[in-house]
Image (cartoon, rainbow, N blue to C red; front, side, top):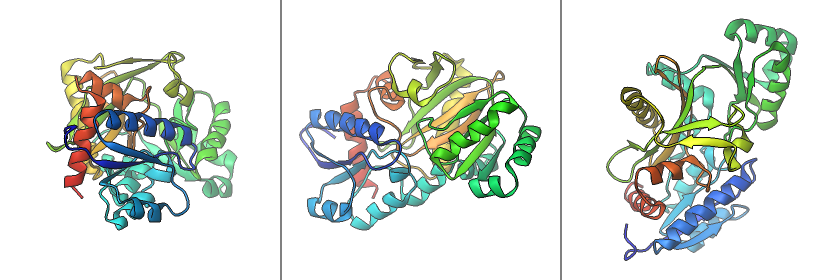
Length: 318
């Protein structure tokens, strides 16, 4: 998409999830890139009468940058389809699959791709079966260290690496702060990476792999969005065969979950070079410290040109 063929694009940013501030930053960043490429952009904070407003605006394209349940659980994306206005991103059913980490992991596992073993627990199950008994069983079944995270959500909110039995109760409480279901997962020691998968018309393609090295060893919400708290290496410092396996896994998972246009797949690489799937993000962060923009720039592309190409392809694939 060139500047001579501008579009009217409405960006959805904000919402009411725990990731509202991140969403607003993503929306502003995308708006700047598209505006600088010659497009007419409106940033809209979803609220009451959103669908009526979109119908009245009648943009050429809707670009959701809503993080958390507001935009990623599939409900809003399914509703956007009812407007008849093209939108960028995965359709509702595919987003719902990826949003539920337990479901996504099960589908990946069935496809013979590696993902750490895990148990999904709702707050009701945790309470009704007796917290103490459940905690003891989790440690016995999965072993230490393990990872506790909300079964839905992003930005590393509510994620804890548990190394001692005494840390597990607090970790469960933290996870349940963000979702009614927690995922308790085996901890894989290794190199943490993320892969942006982009499809601007030539099929899903992996961008350069981003290696994530938090200064304090944990890629927390603060480490993710505060400059200087994490070192990133793009492309990742991996052997060529390992890099190829990681990229292939990311594209396979993007395709397996039925995602489209843009996604980000998070993995960890063990000492043997095996990539283990952790989660997929259907509306990844696009802020100034986010990983997808880093990957785009590492590929020698500009944000404006890439986002314009994505927008043009989204118009063709509704």
